[in-house]
Length: 101
Image (cartoon, rainbow, N blue to C red; front, side):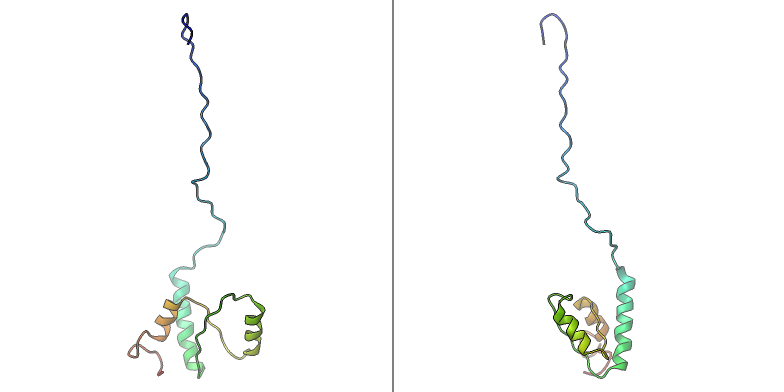
């Protein structure tokens, strides 16, 4: 300020930081409970149709090895889902099993 007048100094504000804002990288929506129920029903129906069921783990579904595996078992059906959903469909204990063994 100068002595003679009341001069105000305007301080420019810095723009807000955009670092803290979450950015959605996808446009997909969650599948929700309905999709899980459909998987449960489909698994339980397939138990009656097939004599064997195998559970396996894979690291990358899109690899050529998995594609070859699917091509080799064309008469089979693959269900991809979370372990908890699969446990619900097949039964968590011997008393809850949908089919024997």
